Length: 166
Image (tube, rainbow, N blue to C red; front, side, top):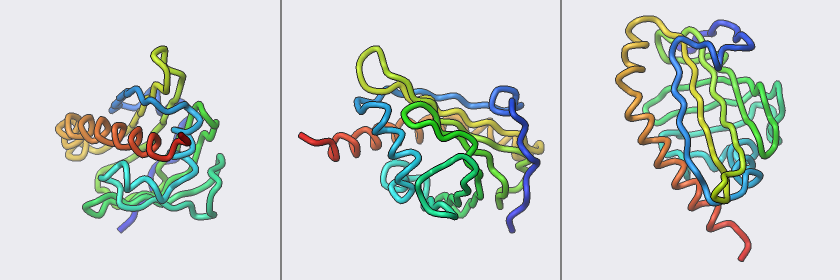
């Protein structure tokens, strides 16, 4: 059963009690990476295998205030509101509802910037406030999330390379 979470505060991404910040460098330019993150929701399961579905409630294109529904392999479900849609720079959302027990507040942000080596420096921040059992599980899951992110970033880069004009 989905439960409504606390309304998000403006500084939650930076001030959350539990935060995970991961980075990767991709060969593709920031605009192409942003397009896959924000404007091609149906593509997420192809590169982020832990994600089973992503769909905008009001259809793409992505915009601030837009809502999306996300499903994870294993049955977790989220209804999110987009809080930042800055092409080539930033994509962020706040979780409004979830069926994950113990979650009180949650937000995620994807920051993109040109890498000094070429391509894109991609930074994923997940911010969470949760009751004790869920918070303890979050701590244990951090290494798994790190591996999942690194695999997803590699697959996303491969997907973008295959789609790039030659």
